[in-house]
Length: 199
Image 1 (cartoon, rainbow, N blue to C red):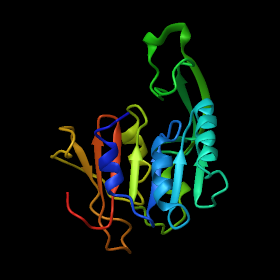
Image 2: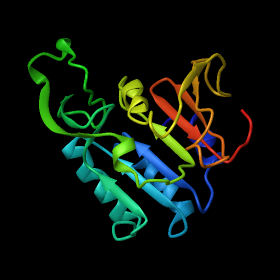
Image 3: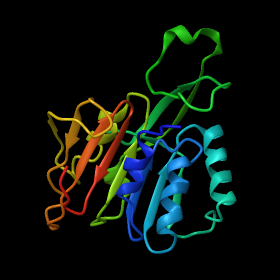
Image 4: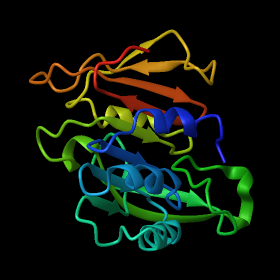
């Protein structure tokens, strides 16, 4: 259950966090985030697979978050452009849906065309985001490019405390804000940290 990543993720949560959970699946990170921020912060939870999105909604309901106005669940693909995109998945698996067509899945593969949005277009103007988790099965660079008007993203060398994978550094939030932010890409997940603390 991503035991090496969850403690790092929780470390950067606080009661007034603004959080993006991109590739939320059934809502593990969404539930953990919302349990801390409840009505003081804001949470946007994105899941493209319609079947998995229904499970995400059940998680919200089970945690008494379904009617929380500060928690927004979105059933859409996230990418670098708005429009339409194709999601490929295997019905028998909860996760693993991807926008990359995996030929070896054979006849079991299902594909669905969905609306695609960008973070730049979706989020309210001027919203300061504290923490971003991205897990979209290899599509992370496209998601990050869809934030390019909001953040300047530069690859750097280095590693997080739990992985030797490269990470991305976001040197600043929107230019009107002095707050700093960092993104790690560990395996298939990226984390964006604000509030000006060091790596």
